[in-house]
Amino acid sequence: MRRESSSSETRSSPGFKMIIDIAFDDQGNLYVVEHATGAVQQAGLGVLIRVTPDKSQPDIAAQYQNGTRQVILSGLNRPTSVAVGPDGALYISRGTMAVDGEVIRFEPPSQ
Image (tube, rainbow, N blue to C red; front, side):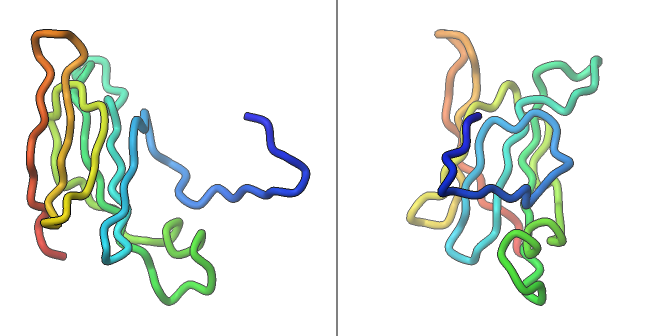
């Protein structure tokens, strides 16, 4: 990564494992897809994590760093991306070979 001199960066949510994609919903929740959890016995099984921001924090980076993390979907077979649909559902693509790709629709649990 190369940062231009006129820009800045902030690590707002450290501590994840193998992030492959992120998405935000209209409530400000951050959804993080980890391609795998790092456990050898679970190679290829990913998770979907919701980070609910702590709105009492003064800046947006701190809101997500101090937010509440919750695994809302686990055992995902090789997830590759996540998107929030116009219906509020999450759409997760998974699979890494020509014969096993698919998109699943998932309605996140209420908070």
